[in-house]
Amino acid sequence: MHNLKDIRNNFSKFEKDLNKRSIKIDIENLKKLDLLNRDLIQKKEALEKEKKEISKSKDENLFKKSKEISIELESISNEQKKTKIELDLILSNIPNIPHNDVPDGKDENDNVEVIKKGKLPQFDFKPKSHYELGENLGMLNFDLATKTTGARFVFIEEKLALLERALSNFMLDTHILQNGYKEISPPLIASENTMYGTGQLPKFENDQFEIKFDEGLERKFLIPTAEVILTNIVKNKIIDQKDLPMRFVASTPCFRKEAGSYGKDTKGMIRQHQFYKVEMVSIVEEQSCMEELERMTNCATDLLDKLELPYRKIILCSGDMGFSAEKTYDIEVWLPSENKYREISSCSSCSTFQSKRMKTRYKDKNNNTVFAGTLNGSGLAIGRTLIAILENYQKKDGSIIVPKILRPYMNNLETLSAK
RNA sequence: GGAAGAGUGGGUGAGAGGCUGAAACCAGUCGUUUGCUAAAUGACCGUGCGAGGAAACUUGUACCGAGGGUUCGAAUCCCUCCUCUUCCGCCA
Image (cartoon, rainbow, N blue to C red; front, side):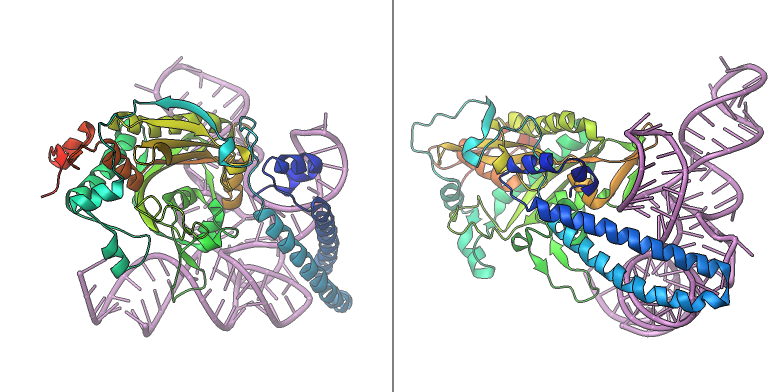
């Protein structure tokens, strides 16, 4: 959410900034509504003052007048509320402004590679896809998921399920013990206001699984990422400056409708309605955002180094970034069967965009109340890590070597092979 | 699910229709004094949205869980909802 106060100072700069994201808004309308809103507020407050004075005077002769003012006040107040709602609706649908470091661009083709690491595996046979490998091992079952649930779900079984658990534990341990994150096991359901706080609502309602919840009025959603619930830990809060930075990590299932991706990645488990992901979230002082983003991204790539998987890091161009982000690094892992890199992590700084929605603040050195910076990043998407291990560690006979770092988490198992 | 009680500023907690943006205490900020791993003392110390100002700041208004209502006037009375606590029931 953008601050109207800031926008007001320089409407044309705001308009230019949004151009970077190919967003066009009716800036004149915004100006007009802002003026109207403030005008109505002034009128309202003048009347309120008059009323207050009458009631203070306790002069019974004026009581009738006060009553008349109340009627006028109500209509002005209603009009002002309506204007404010209209303004908020416009503002809540505008994405974050890209940071200066972010390259201009239209879509994923304009993203820029930053580094490439790890050596690509060489095979003296044609490498199989993860779903072939998994099905041949008898450890991935898509048909069964279709029977019990529907498309875009999967059963993971036996040693592959163990591998999934091992990945979760390995990643959590690394972030907790080595990187200073606080472990959280959060609710997987978020309220409407929480979804609004991180920017999933109102604009991306179609991507969310809403669940039926009889009691209460507020709507509930399955989390599309732990970012939602971890970031909202500091919703409506004035944080003690000395508690910053705050760093949280959780391994949770994530639920996404994947609306609008019909026909994309339909085979295999690249794109599922449900998947596990280890998520990191940082709450920092605004000026530390860029530094924290580098730190967080390193936490993610470090895992790939430890797993000995080849990857590259790219910076997303302005047109390809998510709604709340000011700057995003994607980390892409090598998939031999596709002969290309695929996203396995996305680390973003959201500057104060989310904290303005959530009302997350802290007192700075001058005792001014300022908005905090928020960051989130996957470290890593477990389903896709599983895919990467299957494909990169496959042998000609279809068995899979277990990466060394994971063996302690798997009773020292060295190979996955069919029975 | 039934019954009872409670939600006040960063925290604890007074207030029970006008003098309350809200006592007191803790935490915090800035001083003073004595000195030294600290004590004493004074002042300041909520948030949102407006207005004026380059700014420090000044000023208006709203906010005591949320939303309505009664009243000239509501933290205080009434209604609805949410949340929490305790007791009972049910249950992994």
